[in-house]
Image (cartoon, rainbow, N blue to C red):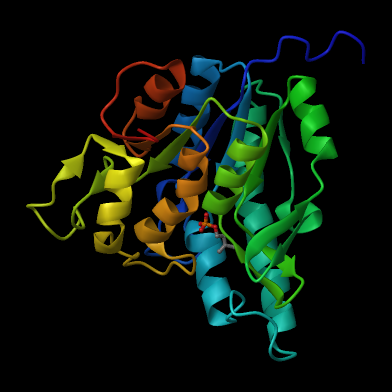
Length: 271
Ligand code: IP8
């Protein structure tokens, strides 16, 4: 192992929202075109040290909601629901992994439910030795929002956003790129309000002021939409890690963001 990882750049964390890679109007509706295009963009950008996290979209959320997995274990009938939720996330992850690996990207999947325990929904312990080794050796770790075990609740749902923010802080990331299906953070829901105004830049203080006005999710989303996304990202911003929210449904945006090129979106910085 000598010689590996001596000049590792700080990693970038890329979170791809479930609404980008799945069709939230159909249970288990996958957007293979978006997955393939994003894999092309990641390959072409050729980032040096990248951690990828993806969300659940129409795979994890409807099943998690049906069995109330986020609220924790209350009755025996939820056990199969936990297994199903975790399983469909591995299926979505497999599709994403296929697209990355067959393009020659050395992506390796890390299963959150096997290495993370939460306490009341918050990450309490994360066995990160394999992840560290992977990064040192130049692999691209890929994680995802998952059904996980919880010391108080028995089990719960851990969002990809919490994972992305946690990893960014733990590995002192250069930045976090959040790929969603809108152009950035708005003062109202841009999908239903034509007058919604997008923020191009926000400081932590400004973000805290508008936090209460950010909407939840209108599609089935057990982890709480944009407001929750922002709340999860705050610890990373507090840590001095800039967060860029871009439209990953639009071709080229993720590529440009990974290359550090100017791209439309919302940049959130500590000051
Ligand atoms: O889509 C939640 O992850 P998210 C994943 O990042 C599940 O909130 C299993 C619902």
